[in-house]
Image (cartoon, rainbow, N blue to C red; front, side, top):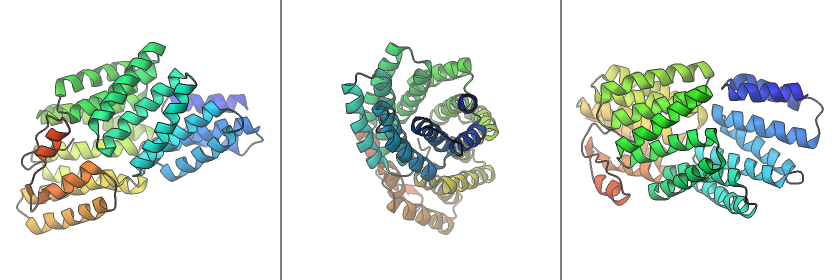
Length: 351
């Protein structure tokens, strides 16, 4: 039995998520103690979350949390944070923030710096998606400080990536690039395939948003190759969207449409409404730019329908700002949020 646990953890550490998933499933079909079952469920939940199977992840986290309730309250909090991350990815940022805030209080009461750092990292990314970049930045800087204190290389790597993302949205591209480069360096030292791909996509996003479109393409291509080898569906979809956006900005509309279609198919499979909004808007923009107003409006209507059913602030603003291919009143919203990013005309280079 310990051999199977070790095999699952090794596979997960090497970004071999399908192997890890099968091994955890095998473990759960065997005779386990309550503690072992809880550990296997938590590991399986983590893998399903990374793979983009969010309903399964949510269920496994809840089951693990219930088992840990009477065994290990600290690990129960780990399951609670994992549930929140899955909820966030499933279009539920506000329930996620509620759960993360409760977990943070308990980690602090227990003086668990590892748990507090991880939860602040999760809060930072969730506040960003919920539309409050200032709160997100505050949590991520706090997480970075804690991860440095406890010398957690993995935590530092992913927090650097998150800071690269939030500074990019704030229009501070040089600072964003420094954090992504630091993350990429750490990921390569750790041989974290998923993290390497994630940071490559981030570096591409910095180049894209800074207007260096051709320089962005090699980073996306590196990320795409790595994501396809590990079977990722979540971050890979956003890389495809970024690739499509870059092709759009270069006037390469056939390649752009193709990337948006592939991204949207993955967003549908994972139930990521936020990603779908961006992919649909990408199609709409291309048609508006080409002067195909009716086609553009049809894509825009579909994006608006998805947006109206979601809880994402920025995505609603992005959809509502486009009317007939013209951008309205979005720049003030970014300035209000403290961003130096100025989307004033089509084609829009969304964050």
